[in-house]
Amino acid sequence: MKQSCNILIVNEIASVRRTVINTLKAEAGNAIIHEASNDKQAIKLLKQLSKIDYIFTDLEFDNGSGSQFITAAKRLPSASEAVYVVISARKDREALLEAAAAGATDFLLRPFTSSTLILKFRKLIGVQQRSSERVSLFEAYPARIIFKQAAYDTRIRDISLGGCNVRSPLLSKGGSIYDTCQIVISNEALGDILIDAQLVRLERDLENPEQTTVLAAFQFSSTSTDAVERLARLIKSARNTSVH
Image (cartoon, rainbow, N blue to C red; front, top):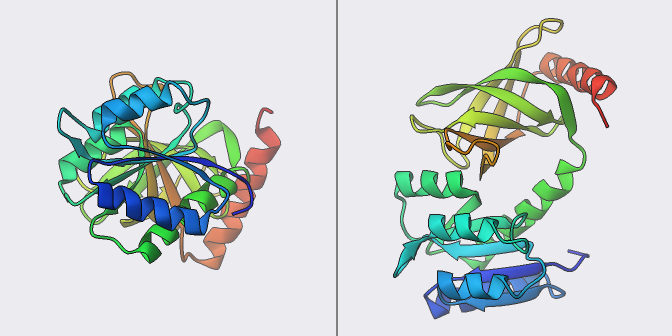
């Protein structure tokens, strides 16, 4: 990692904070890392800081939840654009969906190894870097996201050969971080484009105050040569009609 970044670790367990801090220091030696033992201490610290790039937070605190903390933190200028990673020993689907709706980007289940954390951090950085290669769509394309448990009708907001971002209904019937799926992109000129993908990020949809939708990021995996060629034509067409 070449450029410096600011990281905040929020966790009531000192040993977890120390593990995350030591691992990230070894991985990103030029990072500035802050820590807080609870949500209230973290909010107080964020009000004093100018900008935080990554926040690793617990899912539960003595007097509140990680979701409530993320919602409050996102209102602060220093943390409004931060990447939020929830660390928890719980596998409560509803709690994880609530955190995703609040703005959690990724999840890390305890116990975890340093190697797992490093891979997670590198993946987050890679997703941010690839976002600059995406094409924002002048007219969002309809798509259907098909998980094993459920399917959702969505709109693609931006896209690249490596993945896409969509606005989706809440994934209340099935589908979670790292689940595989198929994405069917509907286009009148090119026909339906079927792509295998993996859900890699969920974020709160700030344009929807009712919180009935989320923003989801997908990484494309194996797909047919024909689908790749038609996807490239779709992206080229979108590039030509995008407003910059």
